[in-house]
Amino acid sequence: MMNIRKQLSGFALIATLSFFACSNNTNKTADAQSNNKQTELNSTSPKFENAKLNEIYTQYISLKTALVNDHAEEANTSAKMLYNAIENSQLNDVLPIAKQMVEAPDLTVKRAHLDELSNILATHFKNEKITSGVIYKQFCPMANDGKGGFWLANEAEIQNPYYGQKMSTCGSVEEEIK
Image (cartoon, rainbow, N blue to C red; front, side, top):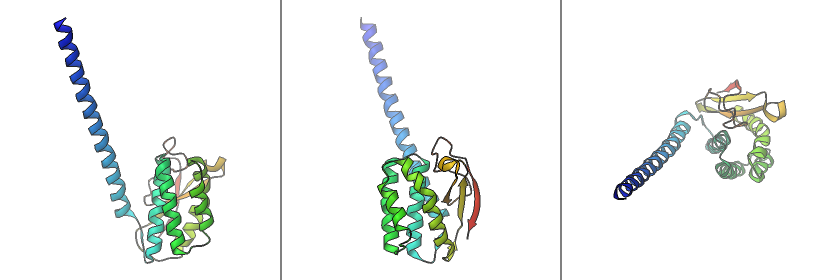
């Protein structure tokens, strides 16, 4: 009887330590990913002469990243921040599609509007002076029921926002905006 209690106590101690070790590693991993994302955004983002476009691009990349990672809540927040940045810059031709992104009830509907949003923003970014960095206009031929879809990125490496983690590397770089 005493031996069984010792064994159970030992198992409980091991389980508790394992739980905290895993929790701690998960938090460290999440913190590291968040820090890596922010560092990547800051170090590789193109910089525009127009500060308002810098904000729009930063919020766009946050939205795209949330779609890549299948994070609905982050996508909702990023869509709202992108809408506000677009509204503040008075890019009136982009406002309707940005509003649709905000109002989209889920990631699938947000993804359905991404191609139009990306193409309109790409046109604005091409017409402005980029003081450093490159925007990669990327394309997935399978997106939007086989019609294809574009998105913008800081890196040439494909991180497909249309399929999230299911097919994150499907696509190719179609254009570099400098």
